[in-house]
Length: 241
Image (cartoon, rainbow, N blue to C red; front, side, top):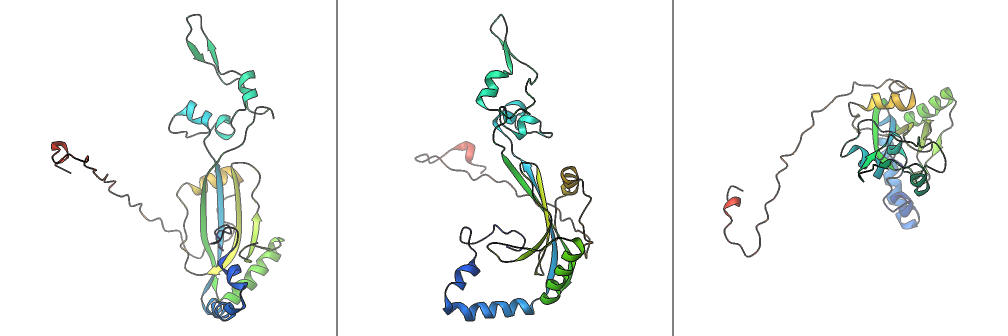
C-alpha cells in the first residue's frame, strides 16, 4: 500500500483498519509495529503515467494497433457529433467513402467520456536506513521541496506528492514514500520517454542509490492445450499433440 494506496484488502479499507477496530488485536498490532521498527527501511520515488485507452472509433479507424493516438483515441464522439460531422459520403453508385475527420474533437458537444488505458509505474530506491531515520528524511525533503506531506486515507502512510495527477488522460503523478526495504527498482524501457512526453520532466527527481537493472523478458512457450472432442477415440490430426 505504500507504493499504491488503492491496494487495500477490503475494498477501500485496509487490513490494519479492520484489525484496529477490535481491542483484542492490540498485541498483534504492537508486535507488527515493533517488526517494522526493526526492519531496514527505504525511501522510494514512485512515478506513474496513465495512458488513454482505445475507444470504438480508434479501433474502427486504426485496427488492432495504434502507435500514435489521434483525437478519436482520446475521446469518443457523441451521437450529436456523429450526426453533425459525418465521416463518410455516399457516391452516385451507392459506395461509401471515408472522409478526412471533419471534427477536431474540441467542441464540448463532440467530446464523450475518456477511456482509461494502461498505467505504467517506475519505482526507484533513493535512500536507505532505519524506519525512524527514513521518516525524518522524508520530513526534511518535504521542507526542502516546500510540499506538505499527505497521509493516505486507508493506509495512513505519509507521502510527499511533488506531482499531482491531473484530470483526463494522459496523466502523471509522482511521490516519495518510506517503506520496508526490498522492493525491486524497475520501470519499462520506454517509461522515461513517455514520462518526459507527458510531464516535460527528465528522470527521477532524486538520485537512485543503485543503477537500474534490466532483466531479460522470459516469454512462455504459449503451448495451447489440446481438447479431444468427446465421443471420438482417434483423431489422426491430433496424434503429434
